[in-house]
Picture 1 (cartoon, helix red, strand yellow):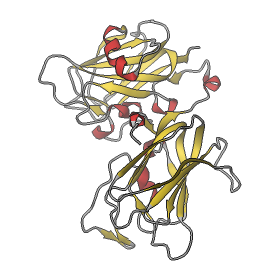
Picture 2 (cartoon, rainbow, N blue to C red):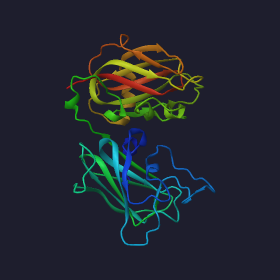
Picture 3 (cartoon, rainbow, N blue to C red):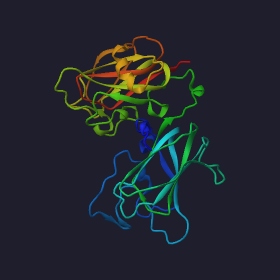
Picture 4 (cartoon, rainbow, N blue to C red):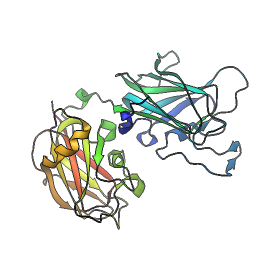
Length: 328
């Protein structure tokens, strides 16, 4: 598929969101849950375990009878799926010739044996050591996937890009993290992400290390670094948390946040618009390796849909939380 804009969306199959396999026909050579790791797959030359060559991904045995292998996956967050990347990196003589993807919506628990599965991606041909990007045209939310490989073999990573689904009626009136990835928040653009990806700042929990945050290169020119985030739902922000956990010699000196209620326009145009957004949080001093919480410092600018966090002049932050109540 040529349209791969979905790659900017959240990977719903990221282990950091809680995604895991709940059933697999066979993962003799390589644990099925390796497919959901956020890092790119690696090759370990000459590394073997009790079952054979160590591979970074899911790998089943060579099938000696009819049938095919599959795994049932519980997504960490329900979501509408826009595209997939079936990644066979480092699998050369042992990749499956084809694969397909089905989905089901079972919000009250794992699907029963008689659950109804919907085909999202019919069988597609695979090549070795390659990324296979396929757009998916379906606007329903899903909680579980069934990933089929024909007949056997190995897949390094399964990336499932889309938008988290939340029934917002259930959280009306509650304070909620409007920017959280699990609530549909997503990072749209940034000045630089040399050491750590911008989307990391919206992930659940606190960062596990510096690589699990957003970090820019050392700035050698005037200016400052920034990230633009689209909230999962319009809302009014009452509490902000900026966490510099693990950033000690490289945390930003200070930060500020601008915000706006954006109507229309594309993600690409947001960057230019952000120059003129109102100040939600005036510039605040930051310290190394700690959570900073702001509430009384926040300007009341009403409901917003997007924010831009500015860091001065550069550096890294681990997490950003924007707590508030949704607006109609």
